[in-house]
Length: 640
Image 1: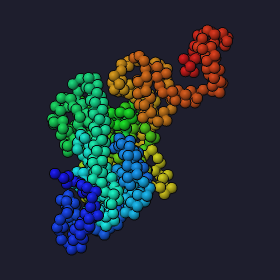
Image 2 (image 1 turned 30 degrees about the vertical axis):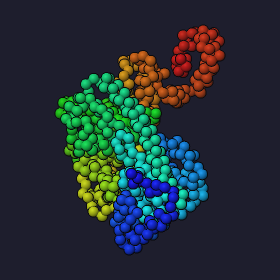
Image 3 (image 1 turned 120 degrees about the vertical axis):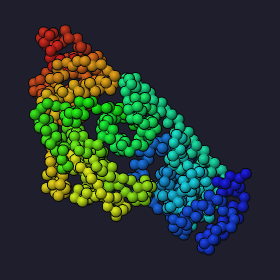
Image 4 (image 1 turned 45 degrees about the vertical axis):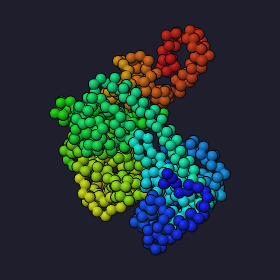
């Protein structure tokens, strides 16, 4: 039996076949009759699809939909391209001199990589067969790339089998690349050349290339899976009988402890398909930090999220579910358990937050970066009447300007090339009945601020690509480290939006103004990171505590957490010493605290330490001071 996916089984009589195909194409396009012969079933089905969606058969060019910058970004970020690159380069060398082009496309048919002889590339440019162009059937009619995607199988398309005139001088052979674990379409490999140089084996070459890439993906997937399972076993061993779930990067459940399945009362494969898990899915898809915490009101559970990395690439998540203690659920103060501090400044903010939590008014949280604005936002939500609905956080400064509108308001099916074919709900819809936290609100583009203002006034949104309003009931908590009043005066932030958001403003104090709160936070972080890294830390040197009090903490709580994790990781025993803290902190603090005379003394002692190779007796003799005095000075300057 001949292969129905191959257009050319022999290079003999190519031109005669081309003439017969031309007759059938003319009959279908001009006479509106079904072809009588010579047309393969896959091609006929594609012609019918093109006819139904209104593709112009006289079209000479495909559409270019990606800019050069977008192409570079995609290739830099694409794991599929990273795996495929060497295979593509090898194939490009193999086809040199054959007048064929090798093409690598994404799952929607956009060309992302194209290699071949300059003369053939220039000829292909006439039909926009170039990087960034869209070769789906919807854009370019019947062609190997688009039809392989539509038919979900390899195919060769020859000359007049192409639905559009511009591609008639060409033959193309394409094979889909599928995820070896899920079967999901990831991309397409295509070989394209002039139709008078048609070869039956070009489809086999495309198929073999796709299979080679899939094998590379399979091997990489198993390595990743083993790495994930090793991490899960370590976590399960450290936290005996606790509810832990392991997800891969695609949010598929890889493993779960029996306690997790029991607590959640669901089979592990269905975990993230539950409606009450939508806030968790949303948080995982937008997570930028290595660790995070999320409250699930519908389940009355807190989830600690820990990212799993392999070679600096995030490959999955460990989820640790906590059932709130009875005292926390009965005591309103339990809602504020994440806010650690006893200073007057913090107690005053917590008191105001408790009052405002019961209302529905917008809240504006201000303060330096790292002061805990999102923690306060989550606490206000947990203490509010909306606590059983979603808390959705979005960082307005971390999303490209052109994507913020679709993230906030969603879009209808067909609005964007390459978008979700079913459309997508925006953050306002996801947060319906709950709270939407707009972090870094000052970064929202001016032209979008008017739409946000309209939502706050009208209580409804309109998806992109639609004219139908959708009612939304959302409480807004916004946050910024910038001075919005100054931005309003400078014309960089809308005054009407500022007044709408600034019903209640809570200014969070920097850590340096919170006195001994730094020691309470330090103790909390030591316990957290000691448990995380499986280390026993029972004590801290007094000079560390003194240092923590005197340090200015420009990065606030976030910097403290990073510093404590560093200290826990690098301490060699059960006690944290000053030298276990990050070096930059010691240097900056020392430079601020020392007088010019002290700085010179430190320089000379460091030089002597080097010259004497650490011989303290010799150093004391040269300085004409007692060894105990020398020892004290070296310790003071952090040279020991």
